[in-house]
Length: 195
Image (cartoon, rainbow, N blue to C red; front, side, top):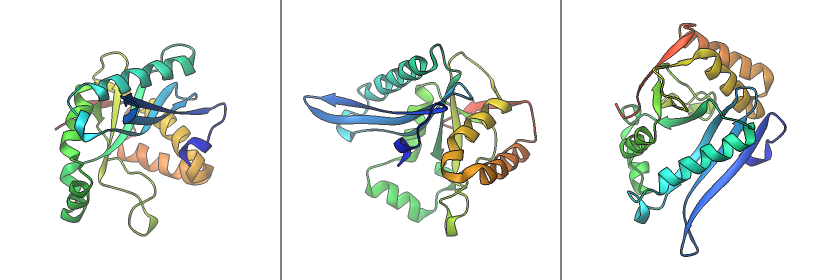
């Protein structure tokens, strides 16, 4: 479904890592032209190759593909990830059952250069009764070292990412709420992703 929402403003990509003819990792991500940024919907590696640099290779290829799509250099790439400290015990158990560790995942993203955007982040739908998902953080991997990210870049990125599944009116409401939670600061601090 995520790959079908493609047009001139949003291009979708899937990159996989193979070893000996078997898929050992992958990432689904999007180039969002209005923001000149990427958004990663998914990235994972097989348990048997974790710690062997597969995630780094996928991330570097993702950035190369995004740059190609942009015809230059993108500002960076965003991803939303669960916040381990805001998971219920039931959610933690569900993560364990599938061999996932949210804290370890955050540590991997930190090593790849992702930082946590200092804003209470909510994914607009998918939570209880269709409401927002509130146990996630928004991470950003800037192409150049940075201590902040412009609120305008966050809003432009999320607008381009959300509009395909929320529609224009719901997207604008979600963006207004995000800007309010950010205190309408022009620049948002980038904090450690694994803290």
